[in-house]
Image (cartoon, rainbow, N blue to C red; front, side, top):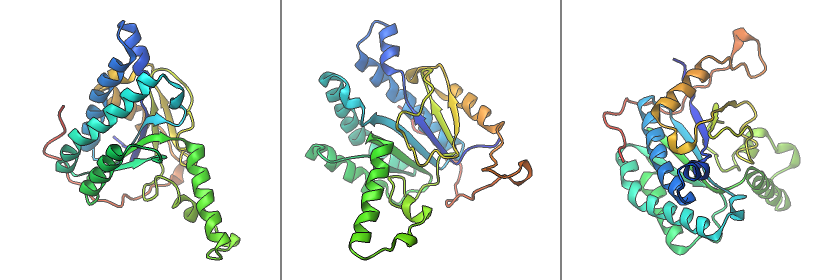
Length: 254
């Protein structure tokens, strides 16, 4: 079965999952961690080299302080508790987003986790936290503009490749496949530049219920699609992976 090289996921529906069970919203976020682990395990099993998870958007600041504090707390605890498991399984962790204003403890945990896992090649796991697609593009524009102002770059030297190298997912291929859970049909300011040719998949399943079987169903749908990138059906573009992979003997368990 044809598998994507890079899967991006909008992990939606935690709050509604909890509400249906008469639980506080934070219970949905806690249960959603199990789906994160299951998805990482599935990617390792299938040798999918890139996974990007949308965990906290720049728009999520509109939520209650209680929920925001919980999300930041669970993010910090997860970094501390999971980084060594990720490293043991050959996973490289990268946090992408606007990290300005994060606490000293959180920044220290991010730096430690990224440094520990930076040489790993079985899976590149991008966690988009305090991320927005428009913010990402504006940051790249500012970076290019500063070089032009400093006389280090000419306007006619700007290429797609140069611009993309300034984005948060520099070093990764664009996502082949976006999965959004919970029945919402939009991309919500996620990876706006990178989704130019991404296949989109929407499921009614809430994120806390999105486990290996649901991921398999999504991958099956992807395998049936033709990705032509503007060319004819007989000339589909196939991009080689920069990494070589071995099937992992172990997978991550909760």
